Image 1 (cartoon, rainbow, N blue to C red):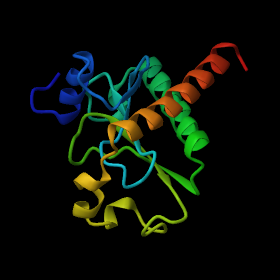
Image 2 (image 1 turned 135 degrees about the vertical axis):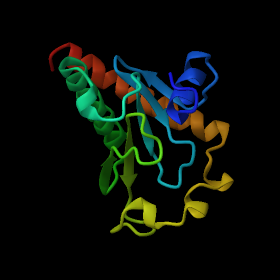
Image 3 (image 1 turned 180 degrees about the vertical axis):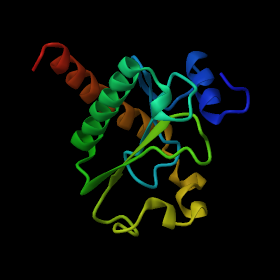
Length: 157
């Protein structure tokens, strides 16, 4: 864990059971709801290992990480039925490996543009944070579907 890394801090909160946004721990990372839900259903997948680039992961871990990310994305798609899903692995601001999985709905402002063109003050303000009740509903739906998908995979379906 890197002391100044925002993702490492989120993971430390998860390990202390102090992160209300946690959906599920997987083998290679943690699935969390993005704190601001301007894009309804936006989740992050935080790698358990503090590395900056995909190629820094051992092959087996990397394969599992990418497979788990794909399962998470399919879960988000199934629950939210967006027009399009965006997958982003950037790291310019926070280099700890993490995926942004962002459902894009037909009524999103700037649907034909990257999410970053919407002013950050609009996307990330207190009005975009889910209430505890909304958070429970979204977490419950995502947890249920993700568990179903993981069971299907483990049964070879």
